[in-house]
Length: 282
Image (cartoon, rainbow, N blue to C red; front, top):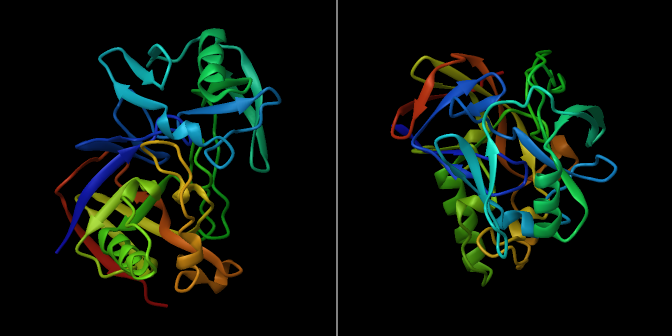
């Protein structure tokens, strides 16, 4: 029996996540009802997105759910409150996320000062606009343009618990320390699958929700960053490349599966739910 063991929402792209006991499944990813996954993003003065790849201190910008606002903390900083409701008079700014250019709501000067001090670089916080539409590419989705927000490419990332166990066994054998799941930043963790079985799933059914894995997730250097301290450690990719290369992605090292929502938008997922996992047959 497969079980949903972890649900994580990352309110701000590339900052720390929040593990939640339950979440609403929307076509664009997980939501608490007042806060959505990758709803916010940090950009430089040219509007280009920032991530832990270049600014590892983003790992220790930590969000906390409060009744009326998202509270942010960072070392050396006073807390910052981000109200949940969209600001109707927010200024639109042009932002760049990979090769996409579109408008987002500016988060205001106070947030810009806070993030600039936290990261040591001039930057601004932007919010995914309430009426914005951003669709995934259709190459891996069977021609479906699934909605997403500020995620790199897809609304959900799935990793099997046994896959991390396998990775850590390989790291320990190589004389490395084991890694926690947060190094790989999944939204959904499922126990009860075989190691890397998620690579071969056609769909997962969780209650009335159907989630379809569509593309292996190529890995950048972020798994080398300690999410508790923001310090870079040994890059696990040199070990992972021995057994996690994907020919379909030009031999990129992959861990986890990017997913789209095929049915059940609006369903509430709960940690501990049974998951029906079906293999893909071609």
